[in-house]
Amino acid sequence: MKNNWADALRERLHACAESLGNLLVEAFHYLALFAIGGVTAWAAVLAFMGMLEKGVISVDDILLLFIYLELGAMVGIYFKTNHMPVRFLIYVAITALTRLLISDVSHHEPAGLGVVYLSGAILLLAFAILVVRYASSRFPSIKIEGPRRKGPGKVEVVELEKGET
Image 1 (cartoon, rainbow, N blue to C red):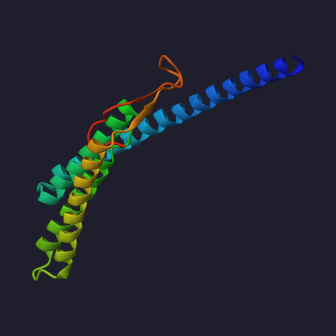
Image 2 (image 1 turned 90 degrees about the vertical axis):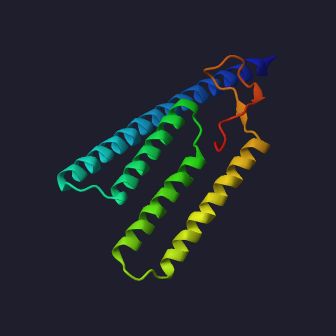
Image 3 (image 1 turned 120 degrees about the horizontal axis):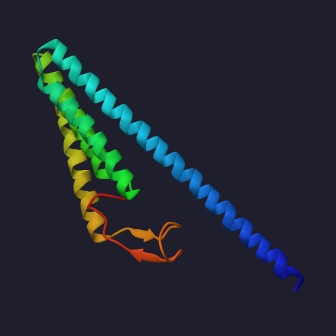
C-alpha cells in the first residue's frame, strides 16, 4: 500500500513529461514547416522575378521552378500527414540532375563522359522510385495512435500514399 501513492505519482509525472515533450516536438515541427515553406516560396518568387528581369527563360529556369514546386509539395504533404514523402526527395534529385544535364550539354560542345554518369544517376534514381513504390504497396506502414486521437496506444495498419514512409 505504501508504494501505491509513489507509483501513482510516478505515472502522473511520466504522463505529464510525455505530454509536454510531445507538445514541444510538435511545436518545433510546425514552426520548422512554416519556416521551410516560407523560405521555399520566397526563393521561388525571387527566382521567378530574376527570370523576368533577365527577359529570357531557359529550360534550366523552368526546371528550377519545378524543384521549388516539389519542395513546396513535400512541405504540404508533411504538414498534412506527418510523414516524409521519400519519393518526392527522389523526384527533386532527378529534376536537379536533369537540370544539370541540360545545362552541361547546352554549355559544352563535346558531350563528355559526365553525360553518361548523369544519365546513369537519373536511371538509378528512377529505379529507386520503383523500389520505394513497390515496398510501400507490399509492406504498408504502421500508424500508432497519438495523444490527439481517440484510443491512445492503439496500433493499426494503414495504407499511406505510395512512396511515403
